Each structure stands twice: as structure tokens, then as C-alpha cells.
Image 1: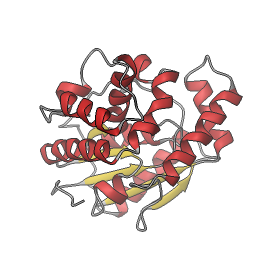
Image 2: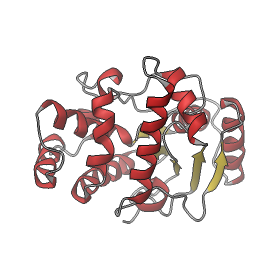
Image 3: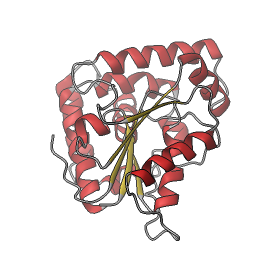
Length: 247
């Protein structure tokens, strides 16, 4: 798939709870970039499939659901809906279905088109996800891949979203890692030209500082005042720990 955004696109990829969202939000503020969490679209699809009793093992039914949800081709109208609260999109039921719908080729085509449509209207942007630097924007100006060992990521997720046991969260992360890394379409893997940062033993600020330095080395302009505030998506609630991810 070809890039459609002619300006500055920073791609941040990595597994769940590796620090993508915390880092992406900090970069958006520092460099006056519009921000998009690509995983929100997959979570919306999973949420609607769950609440409409659409079978996720029926690709045709899920693609029809996508047609209905995204017929306007506008990320704002879908992702900004008050129906999709953080709590709703991150419920255990929805989270379990996300990797199932995400591996359907037709779903990925819908979401990819949606993201490219958004990026074309936000030429200075940062987009986080699983395959932003490999499949969606292979010519992105800056590519970052954040990772951490599963045990560390599980502890972070439990702190961020209390209510589940560490063992349950660890199993969910390992299951999601396997699904993301072994899927046929756009598997989770670092882009060949991405800077890879293991955040296991780093604080949130240390990760932000390292990625900021890398962006500056790639001639991303520092902004003194933000001219384009980050886009508000359903999962745009501030988190203070390193290690969060939507997809």
C-alpha cells in the first residue's frame, strides 16, 4: 500500500502495553503533530460486532458491518462518537475480539483506507498501531518500534486498568502477541528502517526522550507552540505510565 500523506508522518508500532500511546502523545505535543490511534477503528468494529451479535468468524458479515460503519469515510464521525467510551472499547469482551477482526483482510482494507483518508488531511501527524511503518506508511519519515518483555507489559496494564489479575492480563498479552505476529496480513514486526527501543527497563520519560532525540536527528521540526492539537479519539485519556497500546 502506498503512502498518501505528503508531509511528516511518524509511525509508532509495537505490541500491547509497550509505551506507544504515552510516547505518541508526548511527541504530538512536542512537535505540533496531529495524533491518531489506529487501533480505535478495530476496537469500534469489535465493539459493534459484539453488541450486534455479528459473528466474527464470518468475514463477509464483518466486512458488511465495516461498510455500514465507515460509509462516510470520515474518522471523525465514527471515532469521535460518544458511544465509544474508553471503558466500552477496552472491555474484556471487545479486547478478545480485536485480533480476530483485525486479521480479516477486508477489515484491514477498510481501516487502511480510513487511516490514509485521515492522514491526507493531516499531513503533519503521528500514527500509532501495529503495521503503520510496514504496511500503511512504508515511506514514513520516522519509524519507531517500541517493545518490552511480556511480564513487564502485563504489570503495566494491570496498573493502568485495575480489576484484572496479573495472570489473566499476561495470558491476554501473550495471546495477542501470537495473533499479531503470526497473522498472514501485515503481521506485527519492526520495519527494517525503524529504530527499535526495548522499554522494559526504561521510565516513560526516558522513552520519550530517546524517541524525541531520534525525531530531531531525522529533522522533524520542534514546535514552540502547538498549531494543530492532537485529534481526539475515544481512547485519548491521559495515562502516566510507559506501556499502553490500543491494538
